[in-house]
Image (cartoon, rainbow over all chains, first blue to last red; front, side):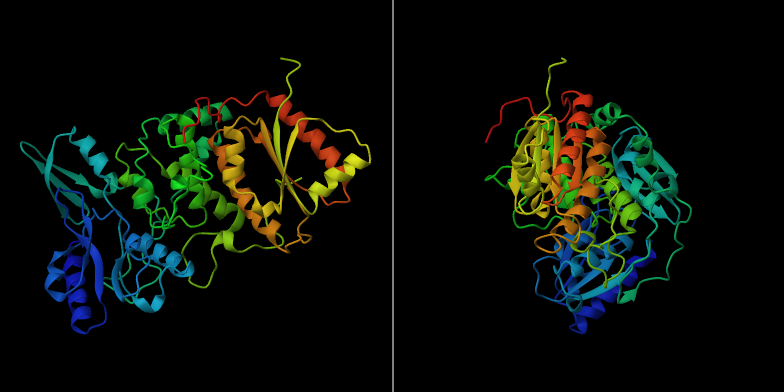
Length: 316
Length: 143
């Protein structure tokens, strides 16, 4: 992963020097370990800010909407699928973009690492291929990256970009034989009361900060449904039913669009597994409509089209 | 609890299912009195927000009915609705709303008998589940 950094910087520098882009969107090292942050740079002098390792969990496509300039952007598998979604939803045009594709082997789940070091403060993290070492004041631990992947990354089957102008490295091997929906199936096997209890429990700490919405590249509506007041569809209190309504509708708005990039779950300050809501929709979209979001530019979004012989069994 | 009757919020499309309800009425057909009908221009107009709002305000069931596929007054509104509802029904049932609470049907304006049949089935299924207990907001609404 670390060898990508030089290549990304070199590509960005070249793009600025050739005048091909006005802005380049990538990641830079965060102010604390394991928290790389998005950065928009506008000239060649700043390219050394760019960085890439296994802590780039936020989704850069958030910065693509409502832009008219030419943009260079780094994109791994899920980010590239979000770019495709943005293009098909007319949020950006393909001509504006120069996509630097990154084959990705997954991001590290910073919470799992924190738990593994018993919540002691981590001061630095270093990656060595498939392992990484975290250091703190009086400890040092080395872990296998594959044991500490973000949950969405461990079941990812689209590690390589689906759209790019240039790749920083040859494609990585895709994971085969992973059961992406194992947890969804487990919940499907419960009875309704158990399901309700499960979902009520996972959102009980929700503080309605909307970080999941803000981190999500799909949420670009000028007025979000949570901010509407006439009529007001979602109550603004911390009533559990209002919170549940928010989570259901947030997930539903991502139906057929979610690429399971995991940004929502990573951004949640209280650690709610919000992907449990979107994953069910992803599973249904795949099973009922053979649809996975953002794979090609020539297909309209799932809910934008129909077939006369669509799934009809649930209707009398 | 035997005399309990469910409240079922019913969204009927103006062109077909509302016409069927009308025909059932003028034909003097009997059907259960549990439905609170909301006339909508098209089943495609019914959004997930409507259905959630109905449940949140205490409906024991929700029934959405529109024109048969291919017969939509707006040509394709019900086709879009069908995709939306397929995903919505799956999600709501996944979260713990019982499968018998949310119903969809296609009923043309000539099918008063089908309207009555479906109404009886829906009322029976919702009644069997008892009062809705999960997705109801109990605290006062604050603006």
